[in-house]
Image (cartoon, rainbow, N blue to C red; front, side, top):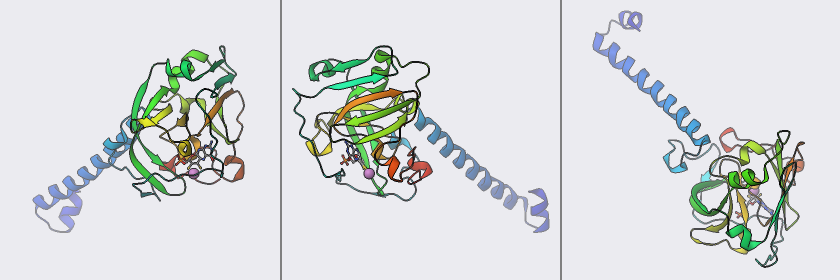
Length: 232
Ligand SMILES: Nc1nc2c(c(=O)[nH]1)N[C@H]1C(S)=C(S)[C@@H](COP(=O)(O)O)O[C@H]1N2
Ligand SMILES: [Mo]
């Protein structure tokens, strides 16, 4: 930098303010990286510097996307099975599910079809609580969600274990509507929304990966909006 200021014959005040600008840029980019790193461990979306992932636009209304079937699953008939490569498989009815510790999170939705919706408040049971109970075998690395409409989607076990992943029964303080996945859906805020299965019926813990409905039809096997993991 001192060479540069000499070459241009600028007074040292130019040099130091130029340095200052570079420093600010460096700090800003490091802060961004740190913000995104913190996000991985559950930093609220609202605290991010860059909140809109690349290629996304913001919407206020919550769109509905599914395969054209919106199953009607009364709470009395609803069951959730968590099984596969676990020590303690469980099957919960509605009362047992609601008797688990309840958590509340606010997170953004990012759909691969390019809409994002900020600040959604979810209530439900934390994924980490479910995993603590069923105890996946050390060899288990994958999860496959099975839904009442026949939909499936897969994630890595470690993604499901993250702090703000939820089996949600409520949105904005009211029970989920049927079209959005009642009585219970998965919410994985850090991934594109196709990974968040509506009308959840079974969570299969697995040693092998099993790509789901969209994953075998050209969608990415991962789904990180910040990495634009859209299509494979
Ligand atoms: N059971 C089930 N879950 C599903 C889907 C589906 O078709 N069936 N679609 C996925 C896709 S592609 C998206 S974008 C979101 C849409 O959720 P929403 O309708 O509540 O916005 O649900 C995901 N989960
Ligand atoms: Mo989607």
